[in-house]
Image (cartoon, rainbow, N blue to C red; front, side, top):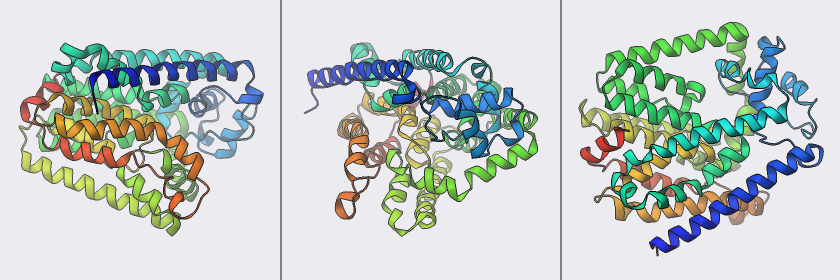
Length: 407
């Protein structure tokens, strides 16, 4: 089924369709935001946070009403809140971009995000040396055609930065540049759930300098965030991500567009209520994280597979991992496809993940308001092949994992 021609042709179709859809959507939204909405709707939350800092509203950064007040001045928001819930220091990163009108800022961010993604794609060869040597163009085409890339660029998300952090951090760690590796991975705290296992790896490997650098950098960015929003703002962030509103609208309400096994458990458990459903997801995440930690300890401090498997576990086990964040799984998939011991067992799950990711919005549109069996389609079923690939990652030979880490 998975012939080279089919992979090439279908990837080309999806890539071309994505380009048309992105160009058309951004053009329409720029031309008539009142009718079609603002371009890059997810980026609006980050622009809002930067704008609030520039306007001296740091202490009230996490108040939904204050964020909505900023967004109300933009045509096309239609009273819908793009909720900023990232750590406080992230708002400072977007403050320079918020100094210009939203439309110009959105275009600038698109260029930054696309440039970061291109830089990451150029370094993917280290994860699949054999494929990269013989099928570089096909690899790039398939990556560009994937739904996470489309969602990342179309929504204006910052997942390309998280991918850059992992690629750069693994490169530095493979070169034994521990201080730099720890600092780079700590910058991944723009999305804390995507780097939570990195300190575990450093601890198991007894890389004390990397662990210290990670902790020191994390302290610096935390203090920087406190300087921007005050300690009241820090507690406001913690209250926001722990609030019933967040659990209802994000953890459960957006579970259909996520990609992890805990999110699937949450979506399927949603008829039981918000608290029970989100709790079920956290239990699954904790079990998977514990399983990785036990495997890491058994593997020993010298294992070169720890960071690649930690990356796979991060995607498969995070309670909050939306489809655009699944770009982090691309290096793992390439590692599995390039290794002779795992290629055959990874092909079909990888293809199934590709298809189910693209089907997620359609399934949500069809089944989102249905009950019974049809309603169960409104769940992140892409998590199933991703979980299979995660399980395969534990079988990566040391040589393959080492090659992938030496980016």
